[in-house]
Image (cartoon, rainbow, N blue to C red):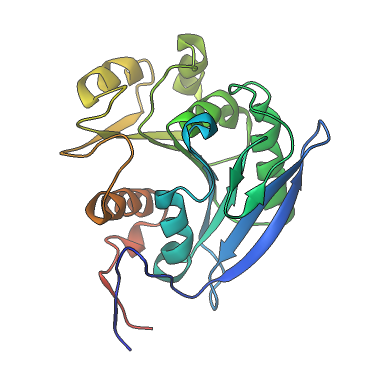
Length: 238
């Protein structure tokens, strides 16, 4: 069976609803999606965009990652709603902490994937989620961080500089038409981390609207974490 991959395509995976327990006593809504047949080769822990502006674990790029990447690239996808965030999957306890108390949320997510012995863990952040990745993933046993549309509004220069002396990889995927940080300025900001890679995407905007933009983002992520699966196919043969 050949299936053209479109915006609404959902390929086979094992989906598991998860409740995360934070160190300060909150329960967070989460989901783990893994390949059906093969064990995953790598794991993506997804930190979503700003919840006060509509961001959640079901934001379209992350939803499509969970719908496609277990089947197309043998990846495990772990998504969660940070404290106080509500999405079609449900609402997490607590209230928005402006990127401060959410430290416990990311650490709970990483504790969970480690408890499952999931391999080669990467933190993927989108917009607000990039701030959590930059601030807190540096202290965790992860391969690195992949940043989608990083605004660098809450991350201090000192926090970013900590990545300079780390072996962890840092990749920023920056839309040409981003509302907050465009490629030229992004290269200047990330120059403090000599090994950081800034990937500019022509014509794209902060929210990666449209199937072409989503596919480009997913391709770039797969190129980093499992290059053998790059580029992603446009047709799934089952």
